[in-house]
Length: 255
Ligand SMILES: Nc1ncnc2c1ncn2[C@@H]1O[C@H](COP(=O)(O)OP(=O)(O)O)[C@@H](O)[C@H]1O
Ligand SMILES: N[C@@H](CCC(=O)OP(=O)(O)O)C(=O)O
Image (cartoon, rainbow, N blue to C red; front, side, top):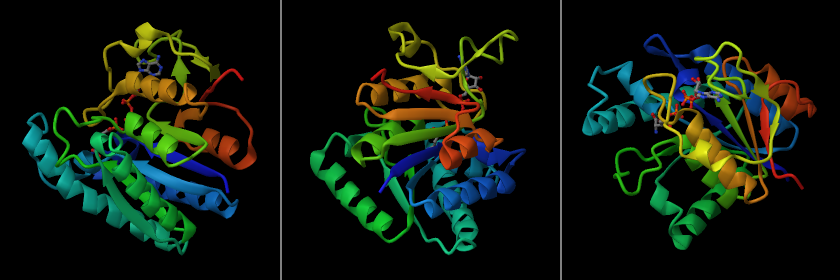
């Protein structure tokens, strides 16, 4: 059976100090449609810190505050997903991982076994980084790279990143009006992987650089990544439901 990972960023899931319920509902509808077509879906969802901040105004620049916000926001987020997936008679599961889980073959194996069981039952695993236990050396710090690891180690053929940006551009579209979207990318130049992170929202962490690192990781392992807008899911629908590539960027090996 075909298996994909969908990653959604904080900016898509929150707006003006609240969880963006309508956008979450649209995402859940898309996942239900993909599942109906016989494809297994693993969801990597950011937004715990942002969701926590809607309930408790801690200064998120302090690490322990951020961890506290994540632990407040995570159950709220999952409860909301649960409610929306119930309408599609679908059970969700929560999995919190850290970077070192993928450094250990044993832990990766155990996590994969659990994911396999969940998918077998038609459950949608919802994965986030375990922000409370992730310390500096172990932290991914961004769910873009976490989701690339999830896609590779849990045998998905495609990672879809739903972002606040609709494509990868030849330069930052928020700074350059003449920036052009790229439809297909086969290789990421080394210097682009070392560029400074420029996240767009105050809860986002990586900006385009961590998406490029995720793409680079997958391209080198013969997997595909698709970057599209999470605000407007029409490009994701076209590609994932009808196999038509209108907007969004495909990152894939040349072969
Ligand atoms: N070449 C580029 N193409 C697309 N986005 C870029 C580029 N360079 C910088 N960016 C910035 O990266 C942002 C997306 O990353 P981020 O804010 O972390 O989103 P998310 O919360 O979805 O992970 C864009 O909104 C844009 O401001
Ligand atoms: N674990 C954090 C994820 C932060 C993160 O990677 O955010 P984003 O860049 O919006 O995908 C959270 O849930 O808030």
